[in-house]
Length: 350
Image (cartoon, rainbow, N blue to C red; front, side):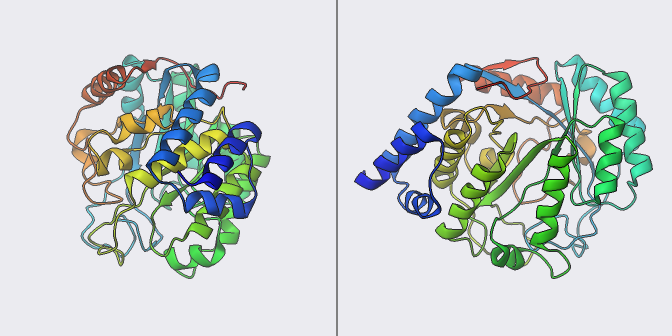
């Protein structure tokens, strides 16, 4: 192992922070030995706080309509081959009822940026979910909205909000998105969410087109500065109907190394082993746990729409029913020494 990389890993484990140039050096030297050491320290940081508990989030993908045309995304507005759908409020509530019976205590409502779901409609759904399941946390992942919209959703009862920052480098952001979307507005959204009292989730794709070690270093520095309650990272996986169809996917190895680094930056962070990680490797989610993750997000969406919410090619579990997804993940986690728990899964104090 590179001597300086080893020194930086030990420094990060002790201080939970590095300088920007140190992150760049470490990201550039993630060989197997470095990743093994990072994972060892990451598990040591996680286990006093969370033990071997794994939190599950019931994912409800309620609309694949999107007004945006992000260059990497399979549900981008210009993809005429995408079979669009929207779930009704009754369907969303039914998914949550099923999930509750299966032991889910957090529901993640995710969609494209669909103008059909106005504040009035979305707030009504959040209120209905809270009334039906007051002991559950409601997480939204519905993209960029106004501060006023976020405030209304918070008032309606939403607890958490997932909004990947995508990249902490404005110039890189511009290469991944159309000109009408801006890095500055994405940052505005994240800070508005924090100001309004949401538990905030940020995150980025690993190995996205044009990404450099310097870009990843800035991502890690952003996580260090912003201190999100959650951070979702997963490998970039191309979709055939996007401009990046022929770009290489992000790697398992780099994703695992970065998961461990993020755990060391913030030991009590909620860190998913993502579906994308399970897509690029049959044991990707288990390996994610070994690298420091502690969250998985099984799909509660109706079976007839699962295959329509394809942000990237090859997505796993599109044919499974909700109960099947839950049982499968419990068995997978138990097989590598982790326990899926019935819990809201709020951040624990470090």
